[in-house]
Length: 139
Image (cartoon, rainbow, N blue to C red; front, side, top):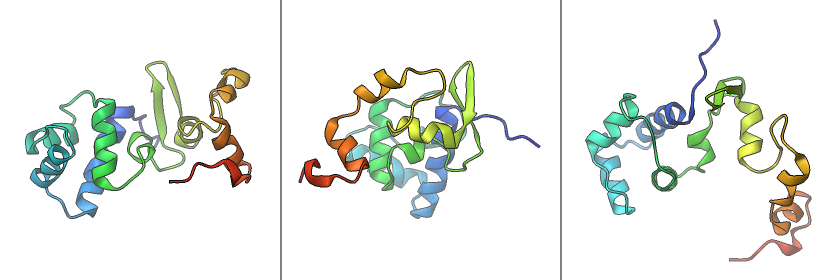
């Protein structure tokens, strides 16, 4: 049986639920943690997301969720199961293992111009990926 493709909001909802439970947070506590991070959420917002009643998540909410749940944003946005079909756009579905490197800025998706794609990666990141860490910014 083939798993139906998840889009970004469905993937985020599923991962938020799993990570919230793994951290031992109930919906109220996650809402409070989001509010403390500067995003006004409550248990009803969390419930609406996890139950599929909420149709979108803003970028600000995604970043706050990742911060509160102690994960990288990509681990909320794209399924961690390699072969999980993922709806990149309303008209394009790819396996999650192809989408994750694209979101990370490592590999373009099929049909993208790799010259344009790679010119938008900051030079220090390219050097870090190649093992040349002399130009990685220090904290």
